[in-house]
Length: 448
Image (cartoon, rainbow, N blue to C red; front, side, top):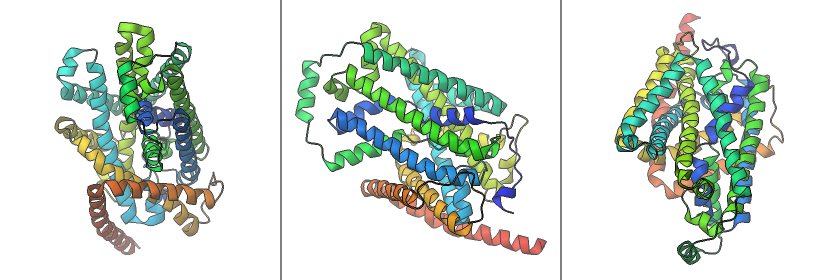
């Protein structure tokens, strides 16, 4: 049975507002609060910094150009796994599915901890019990989504609108507040650290920025639940990518205008510097509330996405059929339960910090396979109905593939252990995928 004829138990309740909100809300998280200072440390030139944010946005738009075609042509929930399995076979599909599911599990644990950390800046008891508070946050967001897709959808839309609105308030405050005067200590420390900008610094800065843009693809995980995926998936990808790029440029430009660049480079949270100038003693509280909100909305989007991966795998016989259980609210409950269960030990052991290093290489590898599946589907399925056709074929898709492979190579050059783990996962998934494919072929022959 082809992917397009697959009957899904998920319900078509979602539309364009959710698709945009889940992309924007997942991307714009706590990373943008720390990233401006980190990038400024790497690249000591405000003009180059802004151009790097533009370059990161351009990379996302090039990626959207590919994702819009393959995810609207195969409108099933499951994300990266769906076209990779369709274009490159069970083994690579299984590898990408497990990689992205594992990445979501790790991120869910990390975001729960982040929300508890920021909330702990306001409530001392939470700061003294961070792990238990993170568990409560994870279970609360899981419970909201267990109720149904409608609850998760409205939380995502409302939360995204609120946090983008607050970010724009910060931008306005930064642009209309008087520029900060650098402290003597900060000026001395930064002056000693400033070096000419090299290619390596630019590449590291760009790699960091691409990571902050991660999540731009989230709407593809809900393609099977969208009322009009052929129209909404492409529109959500492009509109959210442009919106995020504009927001990121505004935030960085406003911070550069409001703060002396040396102060910005010395600060871990440049937004706190700006808000502190206006709000005084209340500045730290406002920053903590904003950061908590950003973490929670991103967490909601990720928790909604996580079970869709297992659902997609189960549809194709690559995971337990229990993952296909959907409640009246449209939530794959068993798959949601499993994702939360695997996130809990990462919260209490701190394993998410270690796992982030491992998942870095794997997610870049999965992204490369996702782009490769585009070319495989163009060759193997030329007759496929494509509501959106990638612009600039094959040049633009080749460019984004080369960028992904370059980022992967640079990551592996510095993370040899992650590369070894990646090789081990490939070595396991290839024979397992081949065996499952053989078993399914034999079953089909018996039925025939």
